[in-house]
Structures are given as C-alpha cells and as structure tokens.
Image (tube, helix red, strand yellow):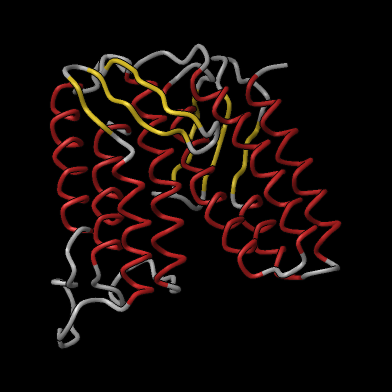
Length: 260
C-alpha cells in the first residue's frame, strides 16, 4: 500500500472511531472537523502525483505532489501539528477517562504513522539553505528559552508589579522546558520526539529529519502555549505575551524555509 493510501485509510478509521464517541460527548466532533479539513486524493495522475489540500495548520496549502517529496512530509506533519492540539484540547475538557484514553490512543497511532511516512524515502530539498536555517533556528531557541525565563512578562499591555503568581510561573517553566529539550553541538541537533517519547540526534545535513524535528516541536509548543492562554485568535492580537509571540515567529520561519 502506498503512503498516501495508508494515511487516507488511517484518517478514515480515526474519524469513524471518533464518531462513535460523538454521541457520548459532542465536543469530540471538533476533532472530526479537523480531520475533515485535510483532503487527500490518493489516485495517481499521469505524472505519478496526488492531489491534496490542508485547510488548517501553519499555513493553508494545497496542490499536487509526489509521495517522496519533502512537500508531502511537510503537509502531513503540518496537518498533525494542529490535530495534536485539537486532541489535547478536547482531552483536557473531557472528564470521562475512557474517552480521553481512546482519543489519546488514536492520536498516538496517527502520530506514529505520520512520523514513519515523513521520514521514509523522502527526497531532501537540494535548495534548502541548511547553514542559514541552522543558525537562525539555534538563535531562535536560545532567545525563546531566555524570554521564557523572565520573572516578568515584559511584552504586555497590563501594568507590571510583582512576579507571576505560582500558576503562571509553573506554566511558563513547563513551556520553556519544551524548547530546552533541543540542544546543538557542532553540526548536530538533539531533540525530544513527542511521538516516540525519545531523544534523537541527527546531522543538520539531514534536511528531512530537520523538517520533522521542527514540526514536532511546533505541535507540542503550540499546544501547550495556546491551552495555557485559553484563547484562539489567529491574529494573535488578543495576546501579546511571550509564548504566543514565539509561536508566531515559528509561523514565519517554518514556511519560509520548508516551502521554498
């Protein structure tokens, strides 16, 4: 079975199992809608390409591609990043443990499949600016860690008095830890894979692995940041605090490099 066919079958299976739970808790339909925003025509055209459309994610994207292109890996990882957020959001809202466990299990199964497809036999983009991206990404991580380490929210509209209260400090420390799990040494990057729950080290010349690593980070950082802030506004105008601004910077950097 080809990559796209396997993914399409898995999405339909996840959708069907979630629909079985919708009657018990209608909030689960929010995850179903997210699945419906991703469209994949698995039939190959004369040039051996498939059609796709990802309506939500870092950026809406659609068109034709081959299954061994980096674009394929980018699209499915982009899709997973927002699916990850939606599932974790619903899990936090649902008190029934059996439903939460089911959703989490389906999410992990989807994550493992997408990880395998995003890293298997995908041709690197020969025009990818490896050295430039490595430097910018490294600087970005260091700035993010430093910004999240401050006791005060220095980027806000409200009047600043004392330190954050205990809950805010705890959440910021939790979000900062996501970025702290990435380290740099010579020409390698070590990161924590939130799908496999393991650390991995790779050479920066491996642009496919680098793309996976960045979107794996985005999925976790976006989810934890937005769930803490408890609001969803694509413009970000409502929220000038540091975690959201870091995510917005990633929204710019990722497409700039990986969709060139």
